[in-house]
Length: 470
Image 1 (cartoon, one colour):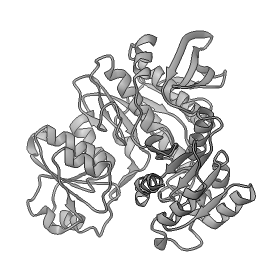
Image 2 (image 1 turned 120 degrees about the vertical axis):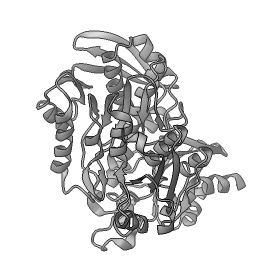
Image 3 (image 1 turned 60 degrees about the vertical axis):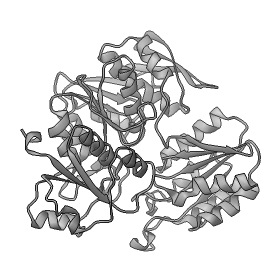
Image 4 (image 1 turned 120 degrees about the horizontal axis):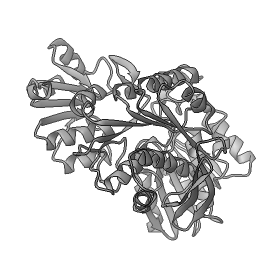
């Protein structure tokens, strides 16, 4: 009924990854779409252009003069935003994005929620592709752009709906995690760590939100959990549904064995209890991606796919944009773009690179941009996270002026620790200075991995241009 009453929809914060993808799908369904955002950057800004959506630049009350039937308010939008204020004053109908998803798309589907501090984007993309590869025509919402699909949202005719389950809060008017709106029938929880210090006080609060997700799975549903993670193991013991555990631990129901790095990526065997299911290969690197793959494998088995069908999906998977995506190669130096911003993700990414490219020097360029990493919450964790890097540069702390000095990440302390280990290390607010420091030290065969959940002031293209000039 709700959909029949709505024709025009305005998105406040339309360039958020999920917001942009959902806006594009709704436009394809025939809805009139408008939206606004500021400081936009690829890939979402260019994605919207390809979909025929031109957002307003910045936020103004006049952007809602057309009186849309529905306003969707992104979770990065706060009170004081002029479009929010006029929405409230005019009593326009508004929803958060998760609420829109639940009512417009999820309710009549088989909801599969992929959650966890790390790996959920890759796992959700991989599962969607495995299902698509056997013509299930699933729906999906993924907080990135899977290269196989070229978009992060699709409404298919099949029953499964794969959702990346974000534990971040829903909106300024709804502080519950997004994934609590997703009506989970099947859930994967890859891992649970502390993050999002702007909304969670400690890891106990994060555990509580995952416990609430588990409590929503119906008794005929399925919970798939990483048994190597003690928090996942603890919370899964309280589930009302069937639980399938996975990991490297022999205590897990589904066990990863004989993991090997290959020129193409990874190869490993999977056992279910004592039964060996077979050998699988995946064109990704890092042991964490083998874990992501086995969580996907369990759900695919549950949905009736064979080992051969699953492997066919694995072998043709092309990853997600900004997940160790190669930006270019100049003078024998390979530049990667990667989304890693939590110390654990940084460490896993670097470990995967050093295993896949033995003998190569790895330079890590890191932008402290997320609400957690720009603070000193992980102050003592970053230097160990960069252990596998040959050299490290740290960029500008995003929105540093909004933090008290005692709250900010201390880049000097990290650099001092790294140089004491004999690593070249540097920090600067200027991308140009970082490039000037880095380029003279590079040599053929080096790998440069740029780690940020944002644009990092265009360092990717600037570095490649400088290398090309020689």
